[in-house]
Image 1 (tube, one colour):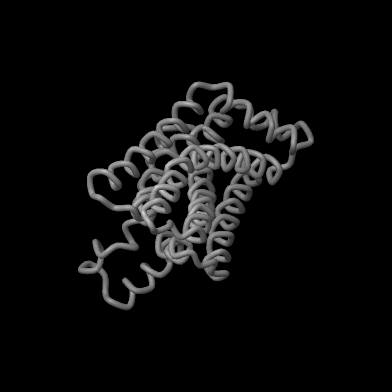
Image 2: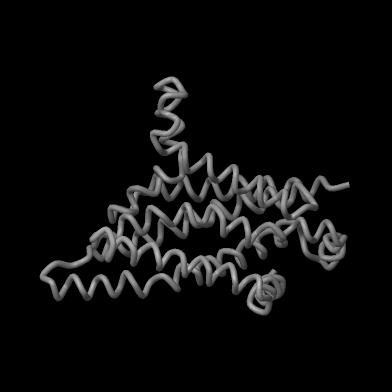
Length: 238
């Protein structure tokens, strides 16, 4: 699995698509962060972390859409699985490579929050460091869940565009379910349940600087479930 992980990671590192997606993600995240500081006059990290799920909604499916759909289209999936590589090892290697790439993208956004910390320190106030650290941890767990969902859709089709669109639509509804957008559509008790089960709602404690074990369990369970669904789909292939 280690060799396959390196192979997948090298594909993104040596491929312009990987660079383009990650750099664009970092550019948009940094731009929106700077906008909040200089245009809106906000020195809080909360708007920055709030916008990241919306960026991930597009950039993670763009990075993930080829993962398994291209293997199916080029008939290379059977070749990989014939090299003493199990379906579980294949899925985990691809998942970890994608999570590494997203982690690099998040790392490219760290400079501005650090700059804000030093700027606010000179002004007599400081950015709450636990909020900064747990915020990034929460976003990484959210990214893992989004990757698992996108990989599942990538395993369902040979068409990368279809995999991308299905992933974006699903992630969009997961994000929107945490807002008041659907409050007038669903009955109150269903709305409360859907809102609570939204990954964006679960990440809110991280953005407050709180490590909630229930939210960590939620993200890990969410990720594992979709990875298992992907593995089962590969095992049931004709």
